Length: 252
Image 1 (spheres, rainbow, N blue to C red):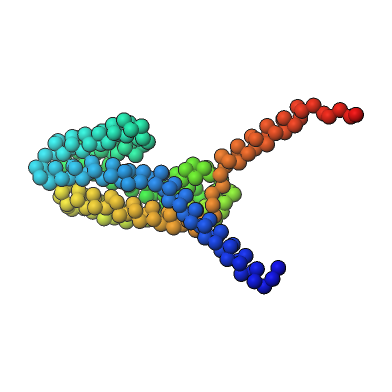
Image 2 (spheres, rainbow, N blue to C red):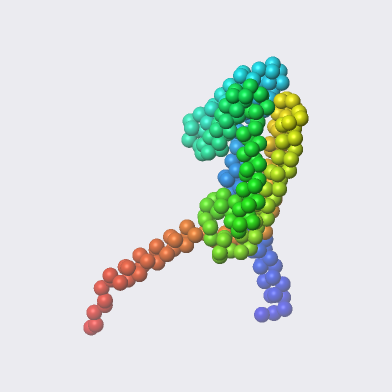
């Protein structure tokens, strides 16, 4: 090997590393979009609450606002069913809106339309923090199946577990900060003020948490594809059985 060969080899190695890093980032981005619903999921999350607060701001009609929000949620589910798309994000929106409608109708207080969602956000924030402290970061439980690694990151991929822990802490703290803004407004602000602040806080904290998750995971070791491992083991077992059942060659 000449002295000119080594820089070329180093350049190729850096190129491969950069390519692998880019591929890892692309895979992580795609997995996050799949897990959290992407742009369409965000629209389905925001639209019912936006419709409720808009109608209530105009006419102060609790029943009309609640029915409109629930109706648009059902329409979003119907569209997904017709298109045969994944309905988990739309269904979660329907349940959230339905609980809000029930609360508001029972109490007669329009602000209670937002209360179930706020309590859910608080519970989710605590879940992110508690599971991470317990060594089972919630974001890892959510994304593990998406990356086809299941729980392999817990014992076989410590760098990835650390990334999941950082991401879960980020989600928990961001959601807690959101709750710290919303709950005082629930007590002190009127319905329209609370509604518009809540709608404005739907997307930015979510995007920040997703971005930080992407940053942490893009720098982490790649996931261990346990499904590919199981398939390889099955193929190896079939090969062993075939070899055992094959007739021995006869001696001449």
